[in-house]
Image 1 (cartoon, rainbow, N blue to C red):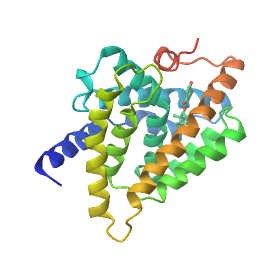
Image 2 (cartoon, protein in one colour):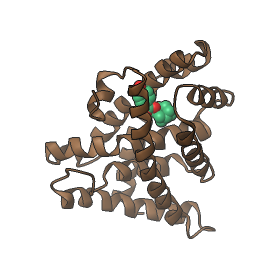
Image 3 (tube, rainbow, N blue to C red):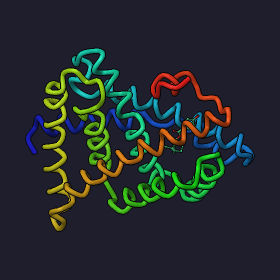
Length: 228
Ligand SMILES: CC1(C)[C@H]2CC[C@]1(C)[C@H](OC(=O)c1ccc(O)cc1)C2
């Protein structure tokens, strides 16, 4: 890994760690009561703070703010669900003090999300947990997800590729260094990004079913997912 690549990795990891989910949201998970309505409100707060954290992290990705402005928006809107699941998968698999994970899982299961969505979601969390990613890998994988050139409405895809490629190269080298006994590890990480894309569909269904039951989203969530 060259000096420049180490510098890039440091910028990404610092940004990833600097923007955390506010502790009050995590604390509330344990306090408030357990009604489906209460759970939905908590998940709304969690999703809203995750999108805020996503926007802050994205602004710190070297070169992102020099992209065409419409493309910046298209990348954020196109990757919000995937970045949110990636971050919550990491929160689920190690960041949470144990006990919180079960409570969060319980609240998700009792918040009006249909069963058919639960399975793929929790399978994804398990498959991320099994990778035991270090924070550098998590941060780089999130940046790579955001810098996906073929999101809808992205005009200058080459400009996005030019930012994503160096990240992929650093991640590839990092995987070789971190997992010398597992030459396929980098390929497994990228395989998770494919699994992530399938969650977009389930997530859209989830939003629709919540809206049909007249659940209210926050303005930020309405804006990032073009609802209401
Ligand atoms: C852990 C998750 C990634 C999983 C369950 C909660 C999440 C934060 C997310 O919730 C929403 O997208 C969401 C969208 C709108 C809303 O009002 C509430 C939650 C889906």
